[in-house]
Length: 164
Image 1 (cartoon, helix red, strand yellow):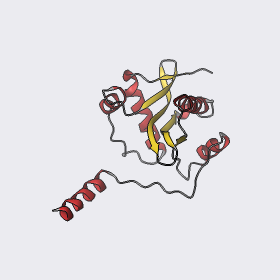
Image 2 (spheres, rainbow, N blue to C red):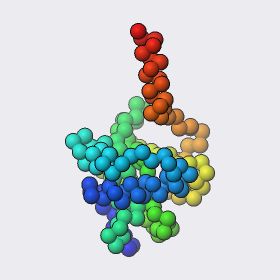
Image 3 (cartoon, rainbow, N blue to C red):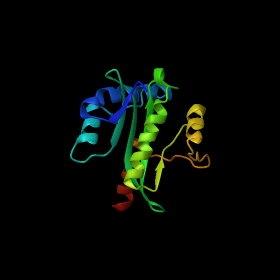
């Protein structure tokens, strides 16, 4: 292997954001990234740590990340959510994705979680194949449900009307 997997440091967040933006471009959402370096530094290394991040480093440059955070399943108990596993385009097929996923699974195992979960776009067949080869269950009968910031605001405004 010509890369090193390690825990992210606060000073890595500029390069982490670059990889996040690369993923957004790949996922055809180039303008969707709103998070900043300051957000990542605060949320990953501040008083209330909201996520843990592993990075892959090659020649003093980050070429991959796995960003995870704790969740709780009402059916299983403690679980970990893998928000993103990102491998720089030039490193795909190098074993880096496997190394990052290995690190996440070991981390979850050491924590004693009951499940590690994540989403994958239905058109990203290389990723789906990769995850299935690793033994993951790609649950195609579940849909992701989200309320974005505008949806949250609208929802709350609707509550205020009915509560008053």
